[in-house]
Amino acid sequence: MSGNPNSNSLLPFSLPEDQCCKGHENFASWEIYMLAHGGLRGLTNYWENKINIPTDPTNVSEIPDVSATAPTTASPTSMPLHSLTPTFLEYQLRESVALSSILINLVDIPGQASIPKESPMKPGPYLRSNTGNQVRELGI
Image (cartoon, rainbow, N blue to C red; front, side, top):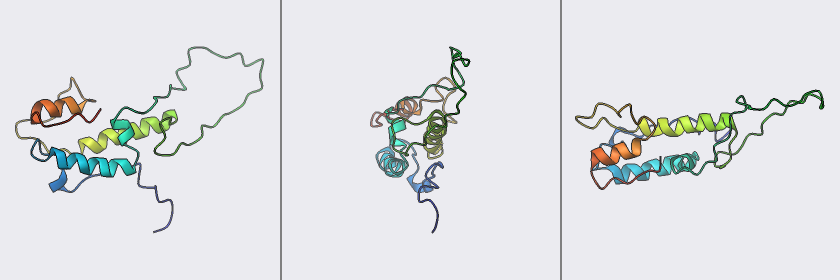
């Protein structure tokens, strides 16, 4: 295999069907699988809210005086996958991959068609309340 060894690390991952979360009966093993796969991709930092969320560079509240300085174009430096200070675009991509990796590895719990709209970005509390008291918060 040639090329960058991390080339697939920014894609959401899918566990085999028997390893997907089906509720409280396999949550502990599912969490181990998720941490093992997510840790290699730097996703655990997103799940545990350890990332410093960068500001949106297009949302500038103050316009700088361009007449005093020469125009320059600063290109953001790419950060490693495990960095706690990603650039804004890296943050958007990795946050999306982190959430997608959780959602695609959940099997529809009988009687629960989907995560309710009032908490689309917080599957941890939803899982705890719908799969039993043994479920621990993932930090998301």
